[in-house]
Image (cartoon, rainbow, N blue to C red; front, side, top):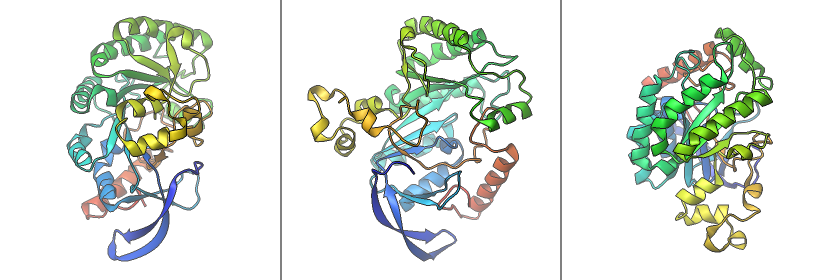
Length: 350
């Protein structure tokens, strides 16, 4: 955990198999929780999440080893949910509302149905309906459309991607304010190339500069009728000439806009000495809060992720967070077996 600014508090840990067994530990107490870049908690682990919310803490294990980290929800103001299929989580939203938590969704809605790149997600049409339901339920400012990643292959051209985005965006635009996209990053993640090859995807490649220009020109034309705020996630190239900003999924601007009445959150985002009349963004704000655990080109502000690698049963062919489908299936089968016995561990899997 690279961010050192979260408060640390004492925590009493209960053994889920024997509630009479407890131990003392130290936990960090973040104001913003990411749930999660590493797995789809709303789709697969809603029961676990609500159990941990009631317990007041979670145990997080780094994919790179080391001692586990305990994370308390005592100070949490906002949950940022990342999901490709949040519909199973919808019945739980009322509980979050009653408990007074803020939250918003980063809803990744690609359309790779024909290519079978996302074999574990429902059909695109079903997910579009879920997006609209969610937007109507919590407000379009709190549902961000992500198209992530944009991937080229022997089967998918730039024009194919633009058509997929057009057909999806024409339906989603009235129900969101923002679109975040990313270009696939194959070279930095050996497991991504390996997983794509295992899935039979031929000719998968990153975008050339010409590809980027063609795509962004087409997206700019589409957005003339949508009027969305469009940003590119973790992108080093300056795309402002296309009306595309630098992406920020865990967004300073969105948090200020949607949760401005939360005094504790605002005190964190805009300390008194940095606030300006009218609530405009102080120049030092986002740079002061940039998440040091993310890539240099990522502009997300700090949060603490509570997910775990190799647990997402969407089994997307391009996923960087799954080591292998076999390992994911083993982890999920263990989770389901424990859950059926009434055991939900303090981490997603033990």
